[in-house]
Amino acid sequence: MARWEPGAGDRLREAALSLYLERGFEQTMVADIAGRAGVTARTFFRHFADKREVLFDGASELEKKSLAALDAVPAPTPALDAVAAVLDTVAQVAGGDRELARKRQAVIMANADLRERELIKLTSLSTALAERLRRRGVGDIEASLAAETGIVVFRVAFSRWVTAAEVRDLRDIIRETLSRLRNLAGR
Amino acid sequence: MARWEPGAGDRLREAALSLYLERGFEQTMVADIAGRAGVTARTFFRHFADKREVLFDGASELEKKSLAALDAVPAPTPALDAVAAVLDTVAQVAGGDRELARKRQAVIMANADLRERELIKLTSLSTALAERLRRRGVGDIEASLAAETGIVVFRVAFSRWVTAAEVRDLRDIIRETLSRLRNLAGR
Image 1 (spheres, rainbow over the protein chains, first blue to last red):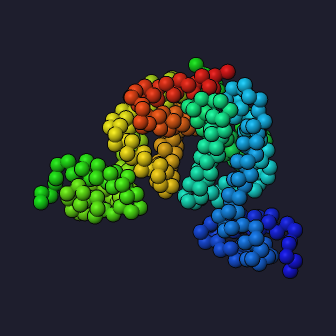
Image 2 (image 1 turned 60 degrees about the vertical axis):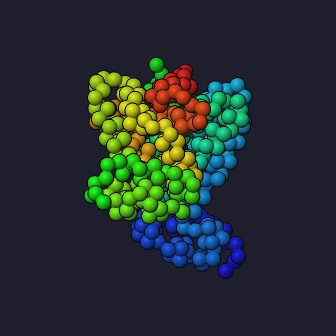
Image 3 (image 1 turned 90 degrees about the horizontal axis):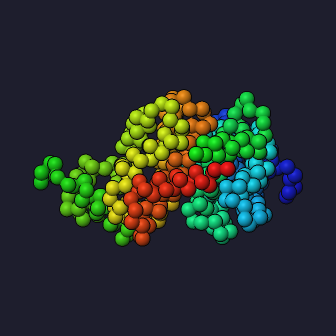
């Protein structure tokens, strides 16, 4: 077997998501995933630290690209507009393969521990965004509010994007959801 | 020893919070808490299911009163105004004893598991509020956005309320924070 197998990461991810859906996350072992992907458990561990990481390995890339997007926004941009620009980038990172995202979402929604992990991931992104907004000179409270509001918009939009009937892309849904929030909050 | 000891619940709560701060939550045993409060472990378990419940036993009352407050809002009220009325009630329930709240917050912030529990508690409140807003005829997405925005405002306001220098009451801080959010989101 070659030390590096092209596409093994993608095959492992597909195999893992299918098994988590069929048997449940708890009931699936790394050996099962590797077996279905046609690789060894060792190959699995070259791609993922454990079976949970298959679901959350995109988090650090998402955070890195989100912060870079925020840094690219011109300084005098109002806080929530800056967050809107970040959300466009989030849509690019998270809005690619809807079928995969649907499976992942179904797996996470079926398991309390995974739902908590997802919540914590987004809270950590929110904290990082707020911190970076403060560095840009946004006030302490406005920074927290803008970052947390951005995460709320993302969560609501993402859960719409993965529903069965939805065909619009994630970026459009995020923009529309933010617009609805602005209407809701407007006086 | 009397079967029912007046004030034992409050004494246990005070003792627990002090010990969690002194020794850490993980390192504190129920026997230590009971000992400091001058009661038996059995008395502890008449008041709390376990040592974590000392920190979270207010959650169900908070949710019940929040939903009752929402039901009391006249039907045609805009979603975020209805949520603002709920937040006034939340302030009444959660904004009583600031010294106790400060201790509780310090304990929770020092422990990742407790932070997760707090996050989950508020997410569950948000879900319940959104569901109740839908029943009032608020659209699906607006209901989620209004409920989640309310929780964001509460979290940001609460963390200000428990800071050392803060003297205003929780209700005023919540109202001001919501007002800031409206300014931020206004076009």
